[in-house]
Length: 235
Length: 365
Image 1: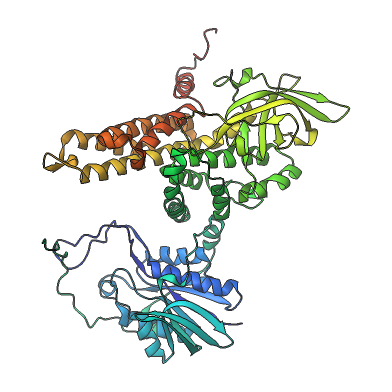
Image 2: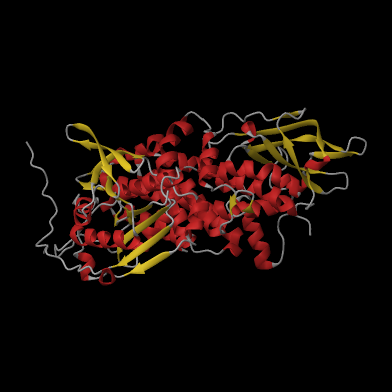
């Protein structure tokens, strides 16, 4: 199988951190705060690595968009078993306004450039809860999508995806190439072992700029204010 | 380095997700989870500084960080890991033959077999040189007959192999690998132990145990052998103790922020704040030291960690004596950690000798 999988990994504030709103109410405090890989992205990486271990795909490429620090997130994916990484450099104001629309354009461009057969993403990020990137990427590429996947099986050149939906479980069959977004019960991500962390050091991460991919990352949205939720009322 | 940070973070997640949930009952019921060796083996953290034989070959800093994360959960778990890595795998790697390394190291690295380190005796703790365990060579059968008793041996009741240090007929101390099943070898558990309850501690009793000569570790003789192993472990212990102290500090901080008395959180009080400031200062300073200062590092980290744990226990008031809040367990454990690998006082004398050039271990010259 010569299939290549692109896995998107997002660097987000760690789920255990107590979030604080910035005093100027333009966003949340990120300086000095613990960050880690979005949990749904971890599940996506695990699924891709599992497919490689079953010899159903040949190469797993981890992709992240952001400033220098996202390289840590890519390295974690490499330590879990991804073969190489791509760091799409976005920093400063562009990074603050980076959202699903821009990221999906980047992924669509990369999928064509890298000739990917499958894109696996987390179903949503725990910081913005958008749940849009996977769907938008599929639309831009005109590829089928299997979202909220709790089970993914490769059958010849088609993908069988069991989706967790409000009414229960829905099973669909889609053609490759396709976009899949990972839901909680798809798998349990592995701990990166010491030897794998050390091997990850030698794996390659290539840098690329959105402009090189012909993508405009300017945002069409403006954040007006960010506020802490008021305390729930008492009865 | 970035790699060491990744190792620390990955292992921290394992410790918090897999070890922390088990420790309350393990400590309360004195139950040793043998499985953790296999789990750690899978993660590649056993014998991490060894090159080859299925080991990761990483730095001492990484080893220290790993120890710190385990001890953040429990000192007993960390003792189990230190013994396996520094006191069993290290002597075989440093002093053993190629055949011995091939035979034991990969299995030890995977946690398939468990080892223990027999140096301390009932009558000889701080002065291992006075040990009474003897090894007598029998030329006819090419074996050694070993007799004696070792005590306070972490892992011994469950160990598959024992690295035992015995005095040979030439008066030199040498290391031997004893295997469970050898006749005359028994490893009773020490009962009524109120420290490191999550790890199994016992004796190694040897009644004329016949050990084939290929089980001798040939590349060292004299106390340099066991001391080399203990030096290897001591770095992990120094960092580890700070991990326990960090847990106690964070637990006490959270408790005093949450608990309201007289209308304000306890953390609003000056005395409480000073205690926490001192704790954090000591922990931060403790993490700065370099490996060369190992005696100072071990003595300081363990002593300070014990103080910090006691202070933290006090800050939790009555709740502080309940094992549900974990701090009292660290207080108990750190008593042992302060003592083993060279008591607080012994290290003081080592440093005193280094500072003055005069030994004061014994009364004589």
